[in-house]
Length: 244
Image 1: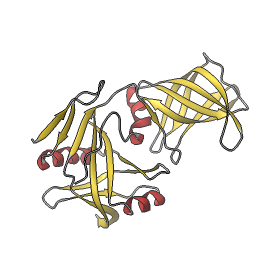
Image 2: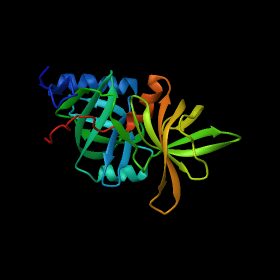
Image 3: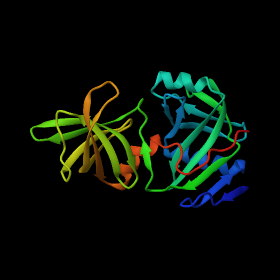
Image 4: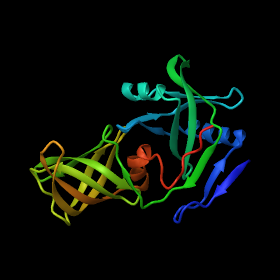
């Protein structure tokens, strides 16, 4: 394996730049077999493209991914010469540059073909960083409160479970409140967690409506917390691979 270790900044460990086509192909094939989600942020509007690998062909010099559920994201991706994909796999964070997107067909369905990546950046993931949720694909939070429900929006969350939600000004969640069975509607699943309110602040939204912003801690299985934020992370103290 040809790789370049990089200690990076303080707090970042185990960064590795892999240049071996065989090693890159092996890692991507594992992602394909496991159905790991690839994510890419596109453009100034934070359009999020979510997909999975359909084919990894090192010999043929290409990879194939499926279309996302967002027509707008598909169009934005095809209009770009390159895109950086990120993926959580094997307890590590992986990023690679994919170039020359082309519409194709794979196993009878429409797909997108890229040139095989020249490098793969791998790094250990930090647990404390707050991950912003793109406004184009928000996490909806349904909280049972009294005889009704509060509908909130998760705006950021960390792997340690700390996060921020914004809810309507009709109901204020008092600091110290512990709520069980909170459902968070994720792009691919519904995650159920408990929520503890740490602090609450009254704010004004961009459209002039009043709202409450609450700092919270989410309590749930580690895999559930990972599922909440995995698709939205494009970099965690990790540099993107250089263009080729």
